Length: 312
Length: 312
Image (cartoon, rainbow over all chains, first blue to last red; front, side):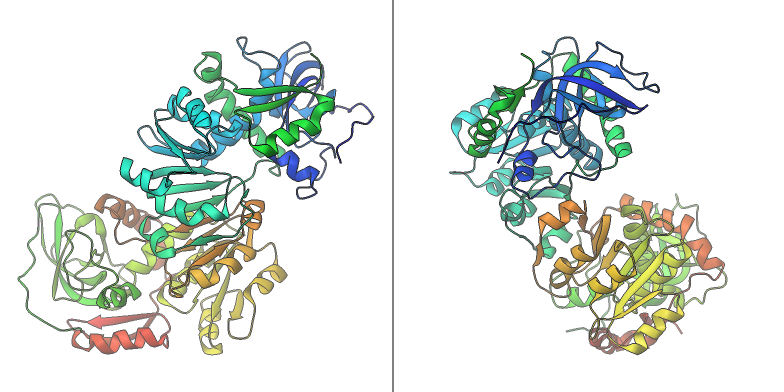
């Protein structure tokens, strides 16, 4: 059961930043944590929330990159559903001037997840094909924009024509309604297959993901919404020299998170500042409507991010 | 059915080397090809053989790295079961002086496979644990030696105490008889699990390989001797941030093969020249005993490489 309660204000260390939270992003991982399937890593707050936007209200003695009063967003290990958060400075970026303070709460998790997986790990190149399952999700909408900005061809799956229309508006090239269309056949019809597949579905899609893969392709599993084990045909995987990565961001070390955030600041933030990539926000609900926000995400009716506003 | 026949002498292009073959290495892939499961890539000879040793008898006009009369071994796309082979110079290395000409026929496939997978792709580091399934095979005996030479801890599985004794003699640290011992339990008892797993078995081992993996570990599937599909539990794979690679060497481009051979020349050859890494040869049979050599490999009774001698 979700509840709103009182906890002591966070204490900042010499390398930390204290943020007065404007809004928190809602993520699938929050739902898993609420259900007891995804306990927070050691040292993280016990309450939910993996990303926030807000204003810096204090900095530790070693922090130089941001100052009190700066508008920032942050990648957290937990604790974002709150009025204040303390976070290592390496996990904080200033918000580009053209981006709304609240909307920025929906940037960090998707930018870090998509950038670290699709570009840093799988090394998607210009002219290659990226397949994104769930193209209208927060992760999906960021993947389409980043894929197009980096010169890739982007294929998406989604469950309705309205969601596919939203993907098309963001630049997706190949639109696949998974209720009526076979993504393997579509990818094969459109070219050599997918060089990179970003997949939150997991087990039930694995065998088809392998068949949809191009030579030397990468499958990036960032979730297992299907709840099922996956099946690997090694004859096909070896012939394609395919790679299957299981990844997650939250349990990585502070140093690893800081390296990803720095790379996002260097590579993604200029695209945000120029307007080429923007946060796609489905809804804003007040913090005490978190149960409703979770029900919305569980319904999969949303397109883009669901945010919880703390100060309006 | 295997047969010995007459074909025209190979013609060399400006970048090729003609080798009078001393011996050819026998590989599992030869058996698959004989059975019709593994056709040669476009442009390769139709007859068997992925590696040879011998003496250079002619070079193309653009070849500078080797000269007529040099003792060499070569990585081939096919055609090694023969008196002469033509091969791009990038796939040829001079044999270190301390290595017997015939024995050198057993070096190239295993050195290139182990080096490119375990070190170039999975980036095994000093102090990490390498698990090799089939420790007494040609691939296995090279893996143990290279793993130890590079400062890793090496665990092996094999099906008999005699094979495990051979692995121990080469330096293997953790000996696991797969008929009596559970490799997952052994790896977990010995530390954080395997950082890299080199596996020719495939499907039937996948679920256990994932459980035996350390955080950020890599499973390298270079074969599917089990003939079965594999099962992935994504909850475990994601928690471990594990990677599963399906790889094969033969169908790679000439440029990709040359890059691997060059890296082997730079990194593995000095270890061979110093005696730290050596070819482990189970048997030498004459070329016309190829059927017997294949039966020996299919029996899995061998320890190390099986060679076919052309000139004795």
